[in-house]
Length: 117
Image 1 (spheres, helix red, strand yellow):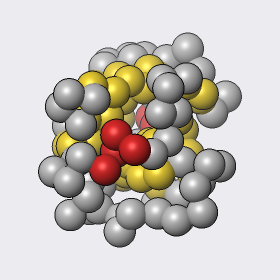
Image 2 (cartoon, helix red, strand yellow):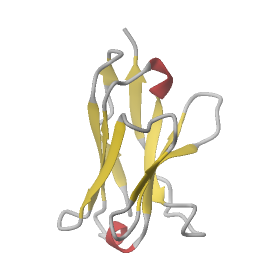
Image 3 (cartoon, helix red, strand yellow):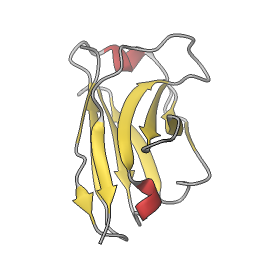
Image 4 (cartoon, one colour):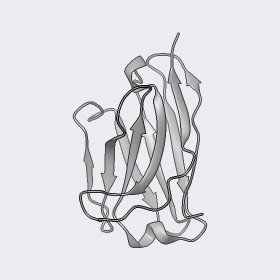
């Protein structure tokens, strides 16, 4: 398995979570990576990306609230999520950045984030 997502939980609106994307094969160190999410009944969408050099980009819906980062020594991608909203509720996945790479790793199971009071 190339990526394993973790860190999802039930959190109240306004709360914070940090998601992790571990890479046992360490392949994330060689690709531009992104966090994606898929809410019930909606298409999977990219919310944050990080290049091999560390440049980041965000969807407008999460800008100034989410921060993507990576630890190359640990071969792990993180997503710090602050000021969470109910509309952030989704399964979150990490994979190669579709804007940069044509191929994707086999999708992991993702990690569930639920924002609700």
